[in-house]
Length: 102
Image 1 (cartoon, rainbow, N blue to C red):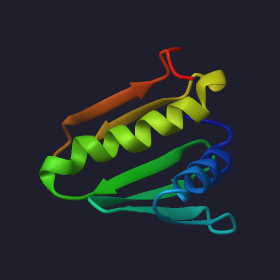
Image 2: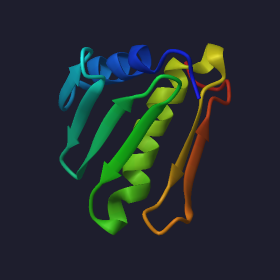
Image 3: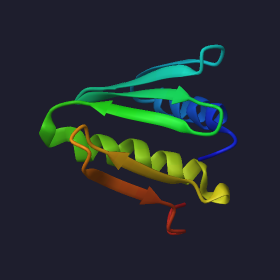
Image 4: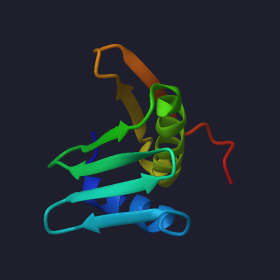
């Protein structure tokens, strides 16, 4: 949960655009990150940023890590935490800022 989901999505898309193709539409609150090994969709809700990743099963943890690590770094002051849940309902990875990043 965050009170600034659009801000974080915009920041994530802008940062990732240095290396991959990204889209972010502030009016609709929807965006996408396109990696060589999968995609991540971003959707800003009133109090949360909903993220999905899509790729081969062996790439899911990598996608979760890339998106999750960057997002929690941007949201460190707000103690942002990213929780991933798989389509099966089982827990995916979880990311929180540990203070060791730059």
